[in-house]
Amino acid sequence: MIEKHLLETPIHYWMKEKKSSESIMFVHAAFADHTSYIEQLDYFSNEYQVIAIDLIGHGKSTTTKKSDNITKTADYIYNLLNIESIEKIHLVGISIGAVLIQDFANKFPDRVASLCCVGGYDVNNFDTTLQKENRGQQVKMMLKALISIKWFAKNNKLISAVTPEAQEKFYLMNINFKRRSFIYLIQLSELINKFKTHSRNYSVLIGCGEHDNPIAIKAANSWHDSEPLSELVIFKNAGHLVNMDNPMEFNQILHRFLTKTAVSKDSF
Image 1 (cartoon, rainbow, N blue to C red):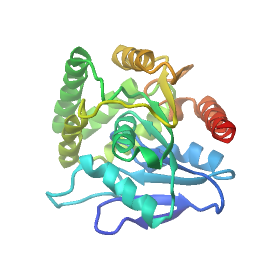
Image 2: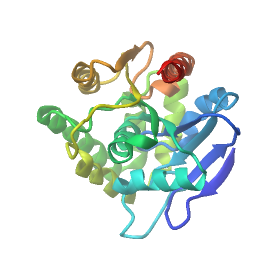
Image 3: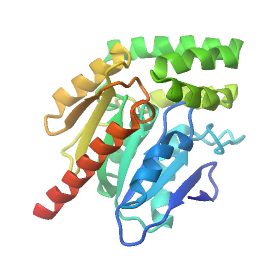
Image 4: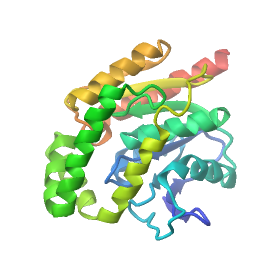
């Protein structure tokens, strides 16, 4: 993987080029970084051009500029695609990654090849009751982090992953998360219920771990019900971080989804 920096932005990204192939971008969950997708980058790199980014305030994408904002992520991705000469891209997002790739799809639908959102919710139709419950959980986690990052990391790994391996990897990512970066997560509320969902010219996969919190499972089912052409998958033996808890099943299902998407395009 080649590390690159998106000029005039805080964004760092990693890319393994494969000419004459389709491209996939992986967008990680909060408190993580691009390495959370290491199993996916290895699995898909033989067939696709793979890209993974560190979101603003995470990993190497640090900044001190007040003008930098996580709500600019769609624009960052758009600029990245232009620089790398990518016309359309398959987008995969976990948790807030799922929120951010939906925002990109809202703003630049013609640049989307497919959308895979896991552990997220419909950013255009997020129920107010679920919003309040979700916000309450976020506030609790922020308070723990303000008191002790280690305490926060220990709690967060237990509610985000179910396998010991995934918990340990996520814990180490959480330890490196800076308290000041919480400001970027708060800004995500600016993206909620901002757009209306129009007819999509690409496929959508909605996913959730069977051991994820009830809010996430309810949100996934609600979203799928509102978009009958979408595909819903409840992943076995996985919590919120499906790709880390059960990478084998995640990779297989995502690969099948992408293959089916390609077949659908050819038939069209």
